[in-house]
Amino acid sequence: PLEGEMAGRPEGVGTTGRQPIRFFADGNFYTPDRKARFIPIRVSTDTRTTPDYPLILNTGRIRDHWHTMTRTGKSPRLSQHIAEPFVEIHPADAQHHGIGDADIVRLSSPRGAVLVRALITTRQRRGSVFAPMHWTDQFAAKGRLDALTAPLTDPVSGQPALKHVAVRIEKFAAAAFGFAVMRDRPETIAADYWAVARCKGGWRVELAVADENIDWAGFAQSLFGASPDVEMLAYHDRDAGQHRIAAFAGERLAGALFVAPGPVAVSRGWAAEQLDATHAGQRQRFRIVAGRAGADRPDIGAIVCSCLGIGANQIAAAVGAGCGTVEAIGEATRAGTNCGSCRAEIRAIIATGRVQAAE
Ligand code: FES
Image (cartoon, rainbow, N blue to C red; front, side):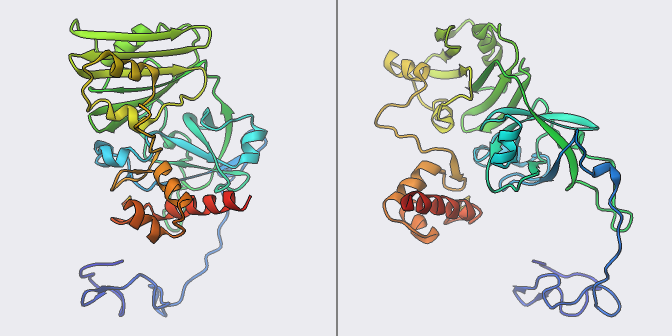
């Protein structure tokens, strides 16, 4: 909606009192006779798919970030919803290319490549993929989407060709995946793939490496910062490729690293919360290394409502208890009752619950 005065606006566009009016809501365009003009266009061969680049990449935004995260990247609350760059791909395309959910994938165009997380979803249509444009070298190892896009603009409108890029997708051969939380942002992260995001109490990092021979204790020290006052607690199962390392400075957690041969199954919200908690006893410290909250602390799941910190598992539980509308979910959990931008996701969780109930 338009707010405030707009010099030279056509009649009927702008504001009337306190009621904003939308562009084109009255069916008129900004031409002398107020009618739209259709302009014949020629598709550039630079953006057409080929056998080498068979998928169409659409780039865009996600709900909680703005441009290149120069402001939203500083907010723990906004960064908790989606904390790394990703590509949405239809299940049939993922299967065709040998990609599993949460794999790291290389997306390449004739101009460059990025490494991002695979998100397999029927929201995406076959033959097309979607990736967000927010991640820069400041927040990810190789997440800059402008490395892929063609330096083309529409000759009439000047609009850059960001919505139609021919790409190919390949699984990145990760030998290990990692997830870490830490009080201070690490200076360097020696991983092929990494993405760093703010969280309450510090930072969180997703990572993956191709090298099978990483010294994970040394890696953890490089993430958390080497300090003589820090006490390390570690669990290593080299055969299973599982490593969990926690560092404590007094009663506070300085950092925790979880490593697995596949995508790491640790509750991100719970791990980030541990940075704000005190860990006086060995029992609490072992829980960190086990990567599990106590039985009295159920996992709330990935955050859906950033405003109120409500997770997917809490919303799913409310659906299971009989909440069948966004309003009912709001009453039961408060999710969706502030800015409202999570309401579409809440609706999707309700729909999934209905499908499961019908099966
Ligand atoms: S994200 Fe704002 S109300 Fe849920």
